[in-house]
Length: 514
Image (cartoon, rainbow, N blue to C red):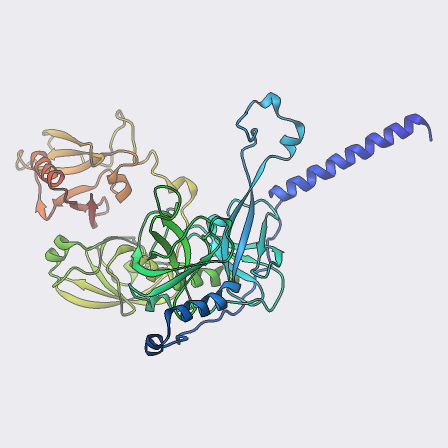
């Protein structure tokens, strides 16, 4: 072979090697898509009967109970390590493009993050948090069991609205955790949190259930469902996706978040209830996605003033502020201003509680809503419709709600006789009001929402331009000066503003602004 041919062959082999390296890199980063896992339905262990009765627990030393739980549950909680891409600039902070090497462009820097997960089936399905795995590169998730066996894991499905995900590892006869009924837990019960905080594998901490149904606004998703179990069992970074178990060693929650100003444990942690978590997990395993029913209503919790106006003997329920036309609730006979007291005989007293109860059902399921209307208790059967995730452009409050000052507001009715128009800006609330004088009485005004500020309390609560203000804190307002006095009084006392409004379609809604 000539020297020239040898040289060309060497160059060709080098190029082929580089090309193969690039292809491998792209595959590992997820630039090519493949099915992540063969999704199939498997059984999970469930238990309605506690391992120990209350009488048994009174006779047993707490230390024995905790030791027994730790011994039985710890093997079912896994250590998850995830490879995630970082910024393609130099890890020391040098971002000059000219100094980046060819290999850095082809193989950008990566970092390892850790979390926890729970084995829920003997054939390797693992329940964890979405935020533990959502940024993983291709083939970038590994799972280590307590006995130090390590497996590559694949994502079966993710649900950002509950911050949950399901992974799959290959194998059989894995230890699996028994699933408890989170609806039966009570504040004050002993619980154990098991996970891998700060990379300390198989760590067990103990505490009590300190609150239920917490909505802490931690999930960054427009369809988020937050009804967390709050506990003072120590939870730190790395505990995410781990198990919260009761004194029977049953899973009652997936540890998800902490309340902290320092980034580490400061007294309170939050877990997704096991009933909701398992519904999500079973959907992801069976369908590869979550199938969730929808009522088609806007809601808010009932406070003291709303309870008095509705004639309730005590503060309870969730008020319906708006009903979607042709939605499930509308077809089932639910009206605006109805107060939902129960879902299938289970009481709901907060908006997030109602969301959690409905999220337990799939589209097509029929549920019974006990409602309070005009002093009477009624029961309405509603067939849930499929929850459709809004298109990305609809997720944010866009130009349709935030018009420029020179734009015309065609959706606001024109004053029929051309009489006076007044405007008032309420900066703290984030909206301005347009008053249109009545033709019959020029002193009386119809008040309309005129402009909504971005990221304001008004926008976050769902108020829109063109809505007519009927009442504020139970009082009819007919002038901007009356409205200003009520707003000033509310701000001075720190009380919320309750607006009764009429939408463009003529329906009545209630909105609470803090």
